[in-house]
Length: 253
Image 1 (cartoon, rainbow, N blue to C red):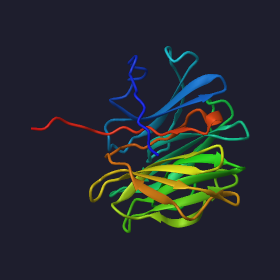
Image 2: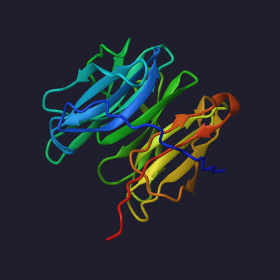
Image 3: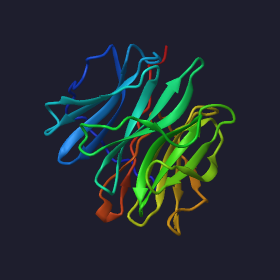
Image 4: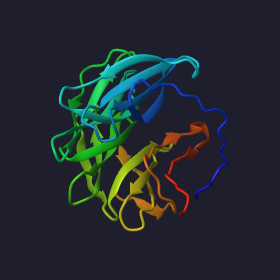
């Protein structure tokens, strides 16, 4: 059942503008602080992307906590992962070459300020967009950045050795970015962006089987085009999941 709760923007505040182009944010509450990660570069598709991490105690005043960079690599779209061992993890994409090839990378931090160098995880040309932990394992959904297009479910017991669990989770309509969250009973929910065909998002659910989400997912039409999919749990004690996404819109001409 899809419920559309009302939302209202109460405040809008700029927290970072040190680069010509800043985009692709993620936000997490960790160790009593807010952390916001995003890409900085000369432009949307420039080859000089680095990952900036900002931190705040109150959500109003923000300071730079870290910058992650790799020579000759465009680092893109950071995603925080809260780990059960108390460390904070970042997933991102490393883009290289012309045309660009993509490889998922991961970095760890003990405090959100000092980060290990990003290292490759998963498979080449499959971008693991977001991940979540459940019952001692991390699950992530990756999408093929080259033909044939598909999304794939991965599982890892350490957050780095990501291996396919469902090799083709979905393949219609150029599926790509996704959000993944677990209900308290272990049910997995995935919000999936698609850019082909009708370009509408899909919402998938999978019941827990054994130690993780099953191989059979039920997908329904979410009815809207969405971009930059994220999911976040809401009110876990009440077995309720809130999934929010943003979409681009422009006035008709």
